Image (cartoon, rainbow, N blue to C red; front, side, top):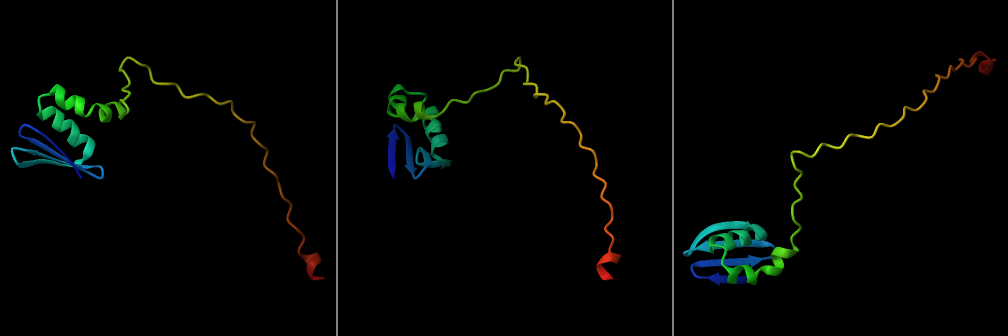
Length: 99
């Protein structure tokens, strides 16, 4: 378990889970990345805290939002395949089998 302390904040991280305490009171318990972001936010975005977690913040993939002005992609129109003709099957003559 890793514990980080900054002024009145305490962040505990263990196996991808995070727990955030402010003034000794539990504020958040759950996903480690969310707890990390809350820790940074509650610290007032302090440069010392941001530098401490610089690697974790840069490793995370940025969300790629689609702009509202971007037109949705049109689905590709596939040419229709020629329709196959129905096969007419002739009934077998069962009588020949029993004679």
